[in-house]
Every structure is written in structure tokens, then in C-alpha cells.
Image (cartoon, rainbow, N blue to C red; front, side):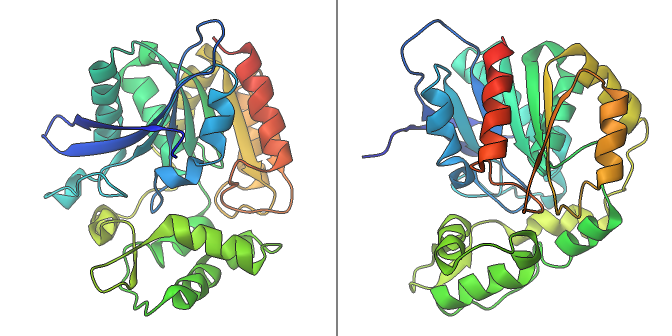
Length: 290
């Protein structure tokens, strides 16, 4: 039996969007947590983290961003961008009567959290930024652009595992075959013929094809400083990350001296948030967050 309820809500442009809703364990009322996945991922990435957080007394919503998982695909691929995604999160919060929440954002999910804090500051009470920041390394951008939305032929689940190893093995050198199969189960669904297919709309990459994402967003560092200094923030960095370099992480820490930080050993972009270092840092963050 699933340990979550299934929620649907409507975006401003009337898409049907999906989230897993994990009820908080008994205890004092605490702000809920919204977990947002990376570019090509979905809510299943939080299948271990979300119930763990819920067990600490916080309601958790793990979302499928539009175009991923069980959320509708956008008829207009140019609406696959952080400002639209952030407004989709506000539509969820409004539908559930949530004025404020903590955000856990992996990669693109962290960009969505920062964008949300810029658009509706009071809605974002705190953030966990998982291997993402106001600047990203070109090496990581190029790697992601090399596979996101690109056609791929997958005949069976062994092919699915091989594909994931080809695109991500450098980030997870210690993964076993069982680990890779677990990632495949999160990343693929079976089509009507029983073949695995990637669980996202290939058109999510269309905005990148038209205008490659900049390594630095204009005023990005100023916005990050404003955001991180005004609310509890935790930065997690994979030790082997090719998206957030050690230099970028160091600058983020100088820019926001009160930001909590942890480097997750032995993994790259992005930590799965079940690693002991990540869990300890998130637990400490949640202990002091509103």
C-alpha cells in the first residue's frame, strides 16, 4: 500500500498536474515541504526522502513538474521554463490553502525554488538547494544538453540501465547493478508494447535548443544573496559534481555566510538525498526551520 495520497491540481493554463502527498506524523504543526526534481526526473526521486521527512512531522508534496511523470505535457514547449514551473507550484499551494512552505530542489528544482522566492517571497520559507546555484559550470550544462530530450531507442530494461550508465556513471562510480536498476525504475515507464520509455516529454529540451541556458543569470548572484540571507538555506554539493564546482560552492558560501552547507562524498550531480551526509544535513536544517 502506498504511503502517500495522489493529488491533482490545475495550472494557470489548465494543465492537470500531479503530486504525491505524504501526511505528516503526529506532533506540533510545522510548515510543509515541497520537493521538486531535476530536469528529466520526476516525483519518484523522493520515494525515500519524502516519507522520512513526513515521519519528522512535516507534510511533504513531491511533485511531477509539467511534462514529467504523471503531469500533463505542455502544448507549448516554450512554457517549459522556471518561471512557469514556479507559478505551477503556487497553483498547488493555493489549491491546498498553503501560504508558506519549505522547498527541497534538486538541480532544476532548486532553480524553481529560487525563482519562486523571487516572484512570491513570503511563500518560500526556506530552501534546500541540491547541487545547484546562481551559476553553473559549462561542463555540466554541456553534459545534460547532450542527452536531455534526445531520441533514444530502448528495447528492454537492460537497455534502459545501459543508457543511464552511459549518461550518468561518472557521477555515481560506486553504484551496483541493483542501484542502476532502481534508477531505471524511477526514470522509465513501459509503453503500450511493454518497452521502457523515458518518463518525460522530449520537448522539455526545446527552450534549450532555441536559447542555451546561460551559465550566469543576469543579477543571479544578487538575487541569490537576497534570497539566501532572508530565509534558512542549505546547499548540498556532490563531491564529484560537474554542475556546481567547488569554486562556485565556495562563492555561494561567501555570499551567504549563514547558509548551511554539506558536501556529499563519492557522488556527482546530483546527490539522491539518501546518502548519510545529505540526510544528516537535511535533518539539521529541518530541526531549526519554521
